[in-house]
Image (cartoon, rainbow, N blue to C red; front, side):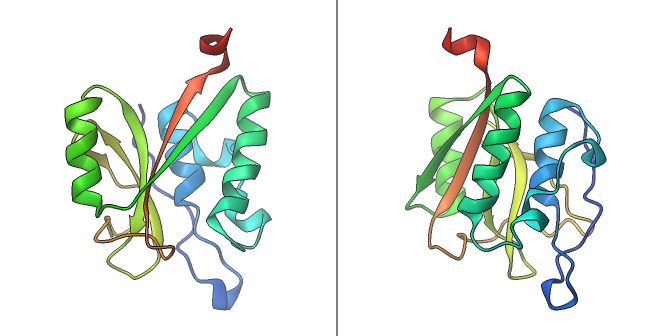
Length: 144
């Protein structure tokens, strides 16, 4: 896993959409963020689900599937659960950052191991839908 930093800080009032999501995907795939489509910008961040659908379609063509789970738990609870149940799994954890916007980081088991934010804004709460999300990239070869 490469620890890339996002290129764009989220500022939708000025037409700039943060790219932590594509950067997190790039980190797991060991690809520079510029080589991953900016899904959030493409859908103008209508919903997190829209970005996820675009990412899933692109990932399918790249030989991967995105497995997503929503938890009615605070991020610390999700980290604890993942540490107990999946201690060696790398995944994207999404919640609210200290800047007050939805954000994603890379976690492994019970620990956040990389924040792609330019200012390390982290995860301090649930996403604006009231949930904490995780996404795991799985090779499509796994499903054959």
